Every structure is written in C-alpha cells, then in structure tokens.
Length: 271
Length: 271
Image 1 (cartoon, each protein chain N blue to C red):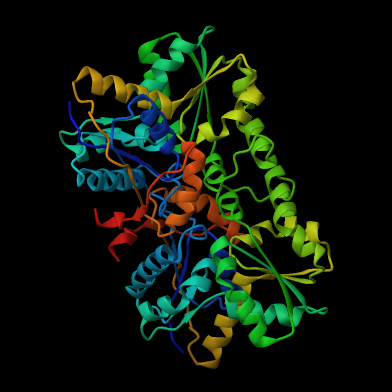
Image 2 (cartoon, rainbow over the protein chains, first blue to last red):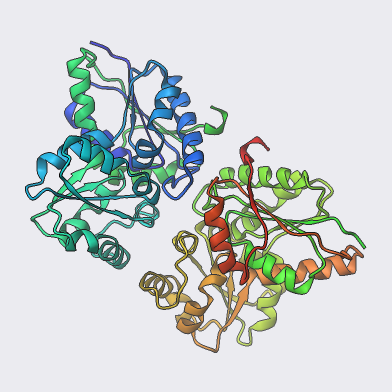
C-alpha cells in the first residue's frame, strides 16, 4: 500500500474527466490536480512549446511527493510523453493514448476506428501508431478539432448549442462517412461534448473516453504494483491563472460534483 | 526626426491590424512586432496573468531600443496599460482605447455606441470610462465576445462561415437592437470579422477599428513630437510559440500582404 498522492495535470479543465473516473474506481486515492489555465489551450501550439509547458507541470507536481503522474491531456500524451517521463525521473507517468487505444480495439467490431484530437495530437500520429501496434489491420480515420477546447473551456457543451452542432458535423462527418464503429475522444475535454457527438454518430458507435480509459489503466497499475492507497486526503486543485473562481465554477461541470475545496494559484513558469 | 523602431505587441496576430495601418500612414517607420502566440488568448484570463504577460512583452521590446510601444491588444490596453507604462519606463506606451473612443464619438450621430471586446476588456469598463470622459451623455451598449479570438486565430473569418455567422448574431444582437450607429471593435482581432459584422449590423453603423485608430494616434504623436523616422529598416516579427510557419501564413491575412521577412521565436518567459 502507498498513501502518496497521484498527480494529475492537463492544459485546463479537461483532465478532470480522468479525475472523476479515478475517484469512482479508486476512492481511497489522494489527488493533486494542476490545470494550466494561464496557458490553455495546448493543442494549437508547437511541440517545442508543449514540451516546455509539460516539463514545468511535471516539476510542479513532483514537489508534492506524488507516486504517479497522470498526463490527463491528450496533447501532452501524444507530443511530450517521453519528455514528461524524463522530467518525472523515477515517478511513473501514464498518458491517455495506450488505455484509449486498447479500449478502442476491444470495442470495434468492424475494425474501423475514428480518432479525434487537437491539431497537435492528430498531427503527431501517436494514436495511429498505438492502434496499429495492437492490431495491425485496423482502419483509422482521424480528424483534428481545433475549436473544441476553446468551446468547452467557455462552458459551451450542450448538444443543442448551435456552435457545438456545427462543429460536430464539420469535424466528424468524415468519420461518420467512413463507417467507424468506435471513436476515441483523444482529448480529455471532449467527453463534455459526448451527448452531441453520440447523437450525431448514432448508437452504433462506441465512444472511448480517453480520460476514463486512462483512469482504468492507472487503477490496474496501482493494484498490480501494490501501490493503491488505504485512505484519501482531500484533493487539492491548482491552476496557473488567477481566476480560480472561474475554474471552480466550471470544474463542477467536468467532475459531476462540487470540487469540494479551494482552488489555489501557482506560478508555473517558475518550475 | 528619430529612426528608432516602434515596438508593437499583441497576444497573437491581432496587432497586425494596427501594423497594417501604421505602414500605410507612416511608411518610413521601422516595426518590431511581438505576438505572444505561445500564450494567446489573453482575454479569457485574469487581470493578474495579463499584467504578468504584458510586462514581459514590454521588457522584451525594450531590448530593441524602441522609441514608442504600441499595446496593439485590446485586453492589454484595457487591463494593464498603467502596468505596461511602469514596465516601459520613459518609453511612451499607446493603447487602443483612447483613439478608438475618440473616433467613435466623432462617428456617432445618435449618441449610441456599441463596444465589443474580450470578456476581460468588457469586464474592465475601460471603454465606458473613456467614452464618458469625452462625451458624458453618450449611451453605451457593451458585449463580450469570448470565442472571436480563437475563431480568428484559427483562420475562420469569412462572413459566410457558419460559426462566424452564429457568433456574430449571438454577440451583437443586443447592440443591433439598441440602435447603435457606431461600434468599437475593441480587440485588434475583430477587424478580420469586419465583413460579417458589417453585413449583420447594416450600412448605418460605423465600425471603429481600434487598431486603425491606434495607428492614427501614433502617427499624430510622432509627428507632433518630431519623432517620425526618415527611413525604414525591414520589419522584424517575433513570436513565443515555435510554430513560426503558422504565424507567417496567417499574418498575410491580417496585413493584406506577405510579411516580407522571417518570423523569429523568442522565450518570452525569460523577460
């Protein structure tokens, strides 16, 4: 057993979709969350910038003596995972790609998998590589969704929101036309758009929530390695923008419950 | 006469709308531009974060021995102008608010002025204060447009783009209904949406381009103070994200011509 906390980071609020599932699967774990709200979004920036930001996030989380770090950010997981591991040293770092890819291959019946993510994630080809390594003959149709993160970070997630409807149609049309029966939501913000996406693609398409898959992978890892905790301390939430109130308000939407504690501001550039 | 360069900064590409007008009015001036593409957008962040970023931008531009700094960013001009001036020391800093407010008061016939900007700008009340100080009985209707910057930074500016159409209707309906005959585009990204906004509001509404107003104010300032240049050196463009190619490609859209030079990356966090 190991009562040290789990560090979780994301560019903003999206990583809370992983935290939500982690709390459900492993209620005795203590969570230290960092949302880089002063520099969100990541997915429209260059790899060099993303690596710099991710390395700072890791160094910040390491100050809490965490036992594991979840890169609960699709962009960080696809573009900067090895650099994140370098920065983490001997602390294991788990990203979203592996778990989601495994779950997608399990879910598909016709071998046709869709992947959506930020422009940086889709440009990286990381999901294609992971999926092909699990099942070499899988067909993959990918689509970048550059405006999903700003839309979600602005709290617009309803399936009848006209902006959401248009973007879902525009970004997912190719995947729908390709007949994919499993879709990886390759950015932890996207589960907030699940209703709109599900309605557009229809019931025949399984939606793989990458944050949820990651939480399941973390739970397996902790249990298999004897690292699960015996009792949880209250979660702590940190952000890099001073508008912590805004984070608290939107966080409830992601977690499905009140965050139950203060949100603290940190100067991430110092790490 | 003074051949030192003019420093111009914005959160990203928007400030180029000011540069475009500055080049037209004062072709002999040398421009050093900084776009904070590694941290854009500013207008959905807290005042504390904006002040930190703006102060770094100013310190960076000061390394070029500039004679004047243009805060060609509506958010910076409305939330952090005095802090920008503190960081600039004896170098004058001109923002977008004064020029645009003067031009709006000149343009309105019915005394009803609309103002659009980022949530941070609208929340600051800076335009209301400036407009009332010029003409105390002016009626002002303001609206925050949180998704305009990400939409424009993604290159979506066409008046028939469905996302643009919906957002213009949503954000500007109140201003249209209030019968405003002048509208301040209080963020330097918004002139890229001019066609869509003009079509929605109709010909009776004058659109005040805050970047253009700022350029005119700078031109007057330089001429009145004997600071105009005699011969221009090539402009230099700096950004904080490594994806300089993306900046070059989109910059032409803002400038209305090729930027005519390399874009250089700088580590803005060091300043």
